[in-house]
Amino acid sequence: MALLLEKHDIQAIVAEVGLAELMDRVIDHLAEDFGRWEGFDKSPRTANHYPHGVIELMPISNEDWYSFKYVTGHPRNPLDGKLTVAAFGALAEASSGYPVMVSEMTLLTAIRTAATSVFAARLLARPDSRTMALIGTGCQAEFQSYAFHHSFGIDTVRFYDVDPDACRKFARNMAGHPLRLVRCDSIDEACEGADIVSTVTADKANRTVVGRKHLIPGRHFNGVGGDCPGKTELASDMLADLKIAVEYEPQSRIEGEIQALPADTPVTELWQVLNGTAPVRTSDEDMTLFDSVGFAIEDFSVLRCIYGIANDGDFGRRSTLVFAPDDPKDLYSELAVPALPKRVAAM
Image (cartoon, rainbow, N blue to C red):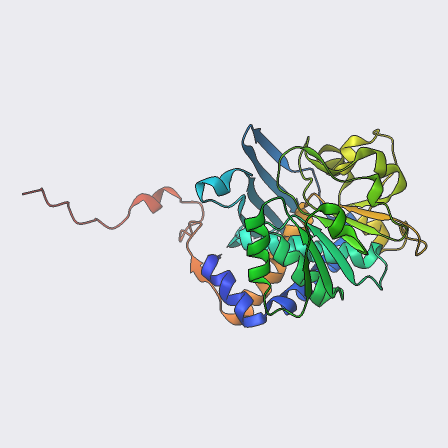
C-alpha cells in the first residue's frame, strides 16, 4: 500500500519538525543527492506550454528510487483565486516499480526551491553575506527569506515588488521574525548594500529585473523566477561578467537565464562545484549567479526526506492505489467486487 500525504499532512509535518529544521534536512538530502549525481538517470522536464501558463512533468531515478512531479505554472491564476504553482508527486521503489508515496507538492516545491537556493549559495556566495535584496514578494518570498536567515545567516532583507499588496502580504507574514525587513520603493533601492540579490518574479516574459548597473564586485545573484523558454530576469549583457552555475545544463539551456547565451558558452553544474572539480567562486571579488530553474533531483530529495519523516512519525494514510490480487497473474478476478445495494427508485 502507498502512503498518501495530503495538504494537512504536510502542514502537520512542518508543525512537528519546524520549518527551520525541515529546511536543514532538505538541504542535507540535496547535498547527498547532488553528491551522487552521476548515478541518476536524468532528462529535461517535459513541458506543455499554453498562452496562459505551462504544465510540466519532472521524472528522475537512481538504482533505488524513481520519482516524478506534476507541476503547473500559471501566472494569471491569482486573478481567479488560484495559486500560480500547483503540484503533486510520487516516489516509487525502483526494484518493483510500485509507488510507495504520493504527496502534495505545492508546499513542498516552495520549501525545496528555497532550500536549493541556500544549498547553491553555500557553494557560490561569500560566506560573510548578511544582506539580501528580494525582488518579488509572491509565494516564494517568505520561504527564501526564512531559509536564507536560518540556514545561511542573512540578517537583513531589502524587498520590493511592483504590487504593493504583495509587499504588504510579505511584511505581514514575516512580522515577528528576527529578520530586519526594509521595504523599498524600487529595485535599485532594494539592491543597495545587498550581498545577495534574489529575483523571484512570476511574470512569464523576458524581463530586465536586474541589469549591468547592479553588478557589484563580490555580489551573488540568485535567479529563481526565470524557469521556462522566453522567461528571464537578468539582462543578457550582464551574464558575461558573472560566473554561472546551473542545476542541469540541458534543461537550463532551454529555460534558464543562459538561454540568452550562445550554446557553446561554458557553464558549470552544481554537482561539479560540490565535488570540487569546477569551483565557481575563486575570490571575494567574483560575481556569481545561480541560474535556478528547478530540476527533478530537488523533488527527489524533498520526497525522500518527507517519506522518511512521514514513516517515522506515522503521518498520512495508507492507500490501496495499486491492486494487490491474491494471484498476481489474475487481475481479472479483481472485477468480482461485492454486490452493491441497488439504488432505490425515486418516489
